Image 1: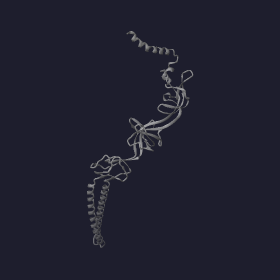
Image 2: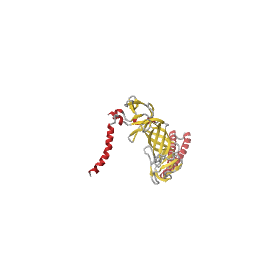
Image 3: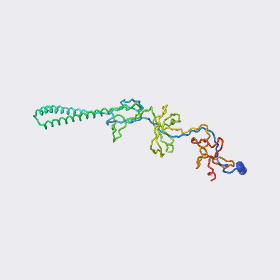
Image 4: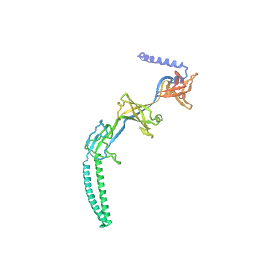
Length: 357
């Protein structure tokens, strides 16, 4: 029983003992043995800013009524292609037709009054010229006639206003485009859009032939973004849908989104945009610099000092020495070394001061 328990212990203990003895015979300084290093190697590096954004139409408008009432007819539905001027909605105009009839009666009455006073004024003019009536009587008749004419004009303007409102009960498409949504149904009471009221949205219309991507750029990166820059937009489940977009707008004022302060930027998509739809969230890549077959080291090997950027290499005596370098393009993992380091040289991945502590 004892031998069966002891043998497994010896089997695992002997290799460990050999490793311990080998370590004791190694005279290499501990810091040098444990310091992680990496060689300077050639690789392609693409420096870029990565963002996320939302796809939206370059032109989008909410269609709202200019008069209120009951929605009588709906000729629009989501996804429908429409032309400018095409009839989309009809609002019931029964009350307006009654108001129009009233305005017409008012006009007819005002016109009869004007004609009657015009006849009286003509006869009074003849009597006044014959000095058969006083000037005061004549001027009073003239004033009554002018007041009647003003009343007729007011009635006519009221009729014009009613006719204009009746015309606006028929709501056409304001431009060519695609109906994105229709949040109303026939029979619903709609409210007109006025200065103190946003009004009822009848439909949302957009031109899907021109799409933009709306992104929020971190304030630390905004200095690298310029109007006219070209970005790559990636969509789909595996980013298989791609399109180029040109930045056309950068907000002058910073805003906070998801607790990150930055600036809104818009880019217009070009080329084939069939894989993109309004409302989609996409990835955006803005290339800043590219280095091909460049000498590079891991980002963790480059350190900032008062004298500039350096890497640490082993000197002739094995001690780490700082080497000033010029850094070019960088990506998430590597940095291009333009000068100060040769291919194949090894650099420390940890600052020597940290190794000593």
